[in-house]
Length: 455
Ligand code: IPT
Image (tube, rainbow, N blue to C red; front, side, top):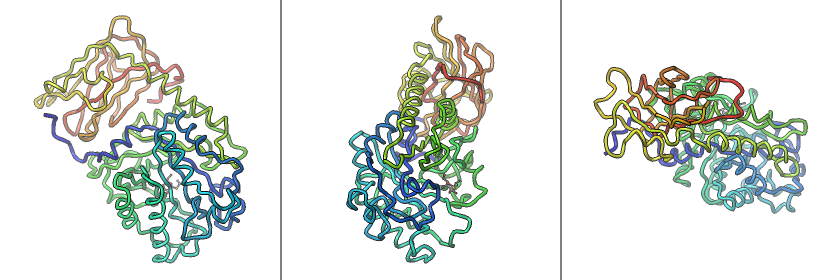
């Protein structure tokens, strides 16, 4: 049988989320039309009039980037609702768009499903428009009612985003996060809840798309207060002694702002790849934001950049230069847990060492490549995190020489090498671990876009 789990372990929904690796964010709303990031809440709904809104075009952009889930900002801090909420007048219903009969949330979820993507929703707790804000009972009732609208009216929602952002001079207001989270789970069983402290997915602590080089999927939720300054480092690295499985999500925009601004442009491919390595390559899911413009479309140049990213990732990782290697390890658990499982391209199979292995010298697994194998400059290591995150320290050797090392691995760790190497044997040493290491994959890749090592 498989080895025992090392607690905590992910839920099925968290595992599914982790394997998505890249997901998309769409910040669109009143700010798009006022050229701002944080609207005041006093905006005239008549300003919201995208001439050619086409959510299918957004989904095609998401697909080009390799994303399988798209999250819509349904209400940002300015309080303007992109669906015709029954609990406020400040919504698309009061705008000229589609004659006041439009519903961006509906168009978004329909377009996502038509393209085979899952949908998620962001509903800002901070609300600068609603007059109930500041009245604890009235505003929490309003917020709960909108959760009901969004989570019962639009089919299955895969992720919901609770942003801890709040202006320095914002009215004092106690959010009933615990009630909200339980409401969400009552309405959608398999949803993942994002906030600084999960419960399912946590913020990574910055908006640059960079996780810590050490990145645990585990934290102690009791250490985290949502929206509080000073928790960033804890969120960035996680906690090897964490009792809660709350893996990090890296939210970052392809442009400087979250919303579309006339004078901003998308980051270059090199920067997006850097973000990819520092998020997906450090045990995170990358939540990439692409802001549609005032016509309601993602700009062609942005779509092109997303496509470049998607195809660069396919180019790098579509070919595994470990293919055809022979695999051996410090020990094997026996039938079904062989070292060669790291080469089969399947998430569910893994190498497990024999129970008595590794007590003194650490564990290792080694690939012996075919004679004519091509050079590589990226090493991919993956843990079978379904049974818990275990690796605390590891190193990579090629033909006996050290080429890379690091701390955590988790779902995926990517090491970029300073230059391509063409060695025959690649050995991964696991020097410290919370339990016997279980590796689901070791891959070797060639990145033609590589500029420099930032290991
Ligand atoms: C920051 C919030 O404080 C934090 O709670 C989280 O929601 C995060 O946003 C998401 O990006 S505010 C931001 C201006 C750093």
